[in-house]
Length: 266
Image (cartoon, rainbow, N blue to C red; front, side, top):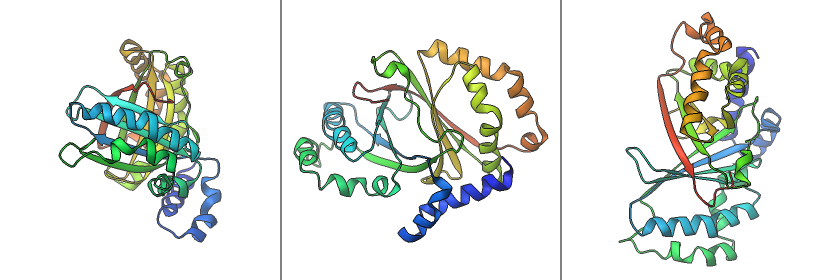
């Protein structure tokens, strides 16, 4: 796809989050068939409150989200790194309004409120989490819906890699998104990297940026997959193209390895 087409789509998608409802409906064809994602990051504190958080998400929040049509919900623990413990939630939906107003909708769900009572009643001296960050993304055109790993249904062993690329300019961001559509999807597939989702950030920190998630059976498979990716002739050709290497398309990379929570649906 040409750069102009990507830029037009990106700007139209961004407008979805900034316009009124009638204007959103007018812009809807630009995003037809593509999911939206709310990516939540819960900063936790080691101790008994982590169990309270897990019980809340697994027994109250995810079932209520499913009743709203938000499914499958991913839940992932960051067990190693400077911000541990941290819980990530991935909420996919084809309905932008539902995703944007999800907390208001949850408050009207009596079944949810009853199940969430221990979480909601936690005292200020022992909160279930320290702070929550959230961002809104729209799926890439070339990967419009998330893919659940086949091992999820059997609760098989799997790990996830969550990667965020921040670009120095909007032009560089558009070029980086192009690279995925011009070959990176296929290279990941050949390299044995499971592809879960790709999202262009509409609202959140560190913009312009994109976030995507890969999955592997274990760390050995992750290392092997990236070795295969970097040595792929098509990647060398793509990354060496004058269109993409005359200046950096990415200025900062956040790379996290996550483990699925027992109640994760991804």
